[in-house]
Image 1 (cartoon, rainbow, N blue to C red):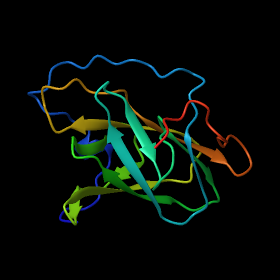
Image 2 (image 1 turned 180 degrees about the horizontal axis):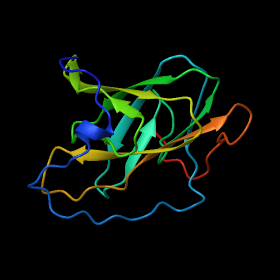
Image 3 (image 1 turned 135 degrees about the vertical axis):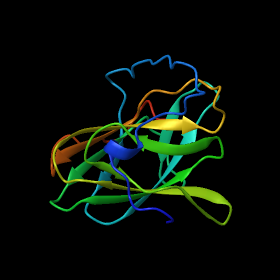
Length: 158
C-alpha cells in the first residue's frame, strides 16, 4: 500500500466531475454474504451493467451486501475489484479502507471493520466518471449466533 489507511474523515468525497447519483434502495428481503470468524477474508466485488453491485467469495454466489458475526476481533477484508470499479470509499465513520493496489493486474483494496455491532456503508466508485453511482452497499455486524444469512434464494449464481 502506498498510503496509510484512511477513514471517512479523509476519503469520503466523490469526484467533482461525476453527475448527481440516483440511488435506489435494496429490497428488505435481500440476503447478504455471510462472513464469520476473525480471520482475514477475500471478497470479490462486481459492478454489473444494471448498476447493481455484488459480493462473492471465490466460486460462490453473488450477494448485494455482507453480514459478519463478530467474535470480538476486527474483520480484515481484501476486496478484489472488477475492472470497472475504481475504488471503494467509506461513508460510515469507523470503516477503514486502504488505497487501491494491483496484484497480477487486478485491483485490490483492504478494509478493516470494527467488531462494534452496527451497519457500515461505503460507496463503489466506477472507473467511468459519467456512470451513475450504484447503491451504497453495507456490511452488517451482528453478534455470534444471530443475524447471519443462510442460503440465499435471491443470490446471483456464479
